[in-house]
Image 1 (tube, one colour):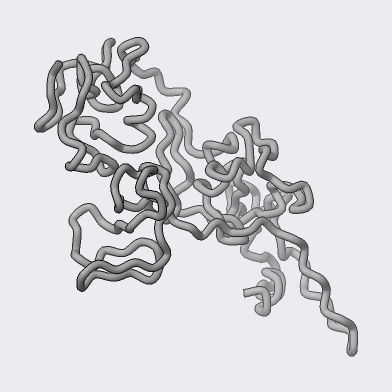
Image 2: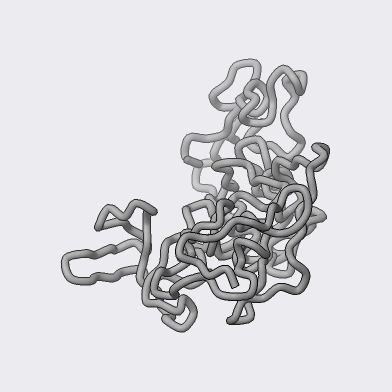
Length: 271
């Protein structure tokens, strides 16, 4: 809380950004704070009668929740004896977790869907967002990616307002988005680890015109070729010739060393 003052107000010789690994300091950094760390100076002594400083403008937090298919949830909804007042809930104890009714049925192709967790999907191919990271305004990596606040080279994206300052101004927990988020050029990357290559079947589309990228993005399948959390059972079986579990690496198929191309989803058609 800002009313607690600065980090320096609570340290004698070192403050948390210098002493603690989780805050960007620690022994591996010779107990030096990150250059973008905040609160290294004690709070100024207030001048009697001086007006409170005007807070700097900041990005608006994107609080609206979405489903795995990218559709906005209704904030309040109810059906029979089930209800929710904060977008995503699990009033019936569903084994797959929180869900919601959506604002646009045509978007979801259903009136409900499972919710993307708070913090979003942190896996992006060979990169994983820093687990649990949020900036000093409470916005996580998924918001930076979804709102286009940054680019993969670590510079501000098309959705970033220059009046908000720099990305590093929102440094938190030892990181800014440029080191915590894959979309901003950070995250935990395994680029140095040689991997077997799997290739999707070239130009593959299902009967509705959706390709392997859609199956991965919307979690329509699992790596074992089963139905994913984004797939609605009322949609029926996987469609296409071949089906996604044979054509798409993400679904357990594809061609190459990693993709055996033999997985078939439960209840799916093999084409």
